[in-house]
Image (cartoon, rainbow, N blue to C red; front, side, top):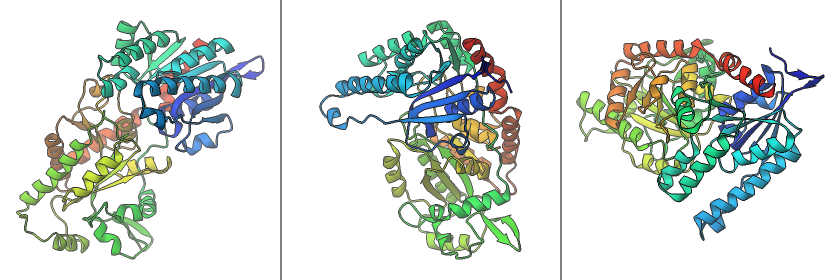
Length: 473
């Protein structure tokens, strides 16, 4: 471990997130590495909302300073532009108060971007006032996210772009998440950034049978509660045996996966415009209809009889699919209403927000991951896919310009551009599930290899620690 000491004083870093730290995994991992690998004291200045991982909360070298979120709903009804300006001004004052007065003087600030306004200006001013250095971790470009709702040509977006570029260039160092983003920053922004790929930490791994059974037991009520009318999963809620879940059975002290269990598909989403969730809903509906057609079922078939057969253990060449969608965001309720209106026989949806300790277990217990992330800039990669690979979970991912830096077709996953393509992939991968699905098993091997080839701590020590030491030095 490289311990940062100067005249007997441990060096100190401030990690700044103008957002929910519990929903900022990369900045949580930075904080753990700064404390454990660089031997620094770490102050996290962020908004509250969700609990960060237990490893952060229990680390004596990490100190979390929670800011209040700024809500101006009353003014929003009068003027959207005025609301943005006033909100940014209030956030700037709050940030300066925390960065200059509430926390001990750091040697370096590491700030997440986006959001850029007012974060970059506040951190730059604080670093100047306190004699500290300033590193930006570029996750994406803030102006491109703003452009999703206003359009790239809007004056507010152009001002945001100038602000982000101007203050981003003032940093003493920079990280970014892809080679494509590094090239963009270098060629068009004049910023020399170090590529630090997202990697899953060690607590992302394939779940054991015991971990799966315990997780499904804890989530039993949520899994068996339909979103509306009964579905192909909720029919199993009448089973009273506490040793049985939808996926597993405990018999004579041993845990078994049920042969007629549903296939578990997991997707994590922020329910925002850069992830078109309707693609997944349409693909699920297509899977449901195509399976029925393949098995010679018509629309008049009694779904109640089908569900009784499933409940009694009957297996089909194509399994039921249970989609568990995790995450919080503005469009969640809209899509939940759409899900309730779907008429599905072999497919069910559940939306959840999991504890940070349970999320890796869910990924490690699933059969397939789906990523709908398409990137507002086309230059960032979805962290969720990295976490899935860390758990040995193969992925079907929406295709965009630099996704091939992460997802290797027919190795650790597949790409799709339309709902029909995703439905085709679901049909191909799950035919013969759980034993005779060779394509799925092959992708799982590739995902395991990808996830085990490098972990966050290894990449951070190789690429991030030298930059941190260089900037501080």
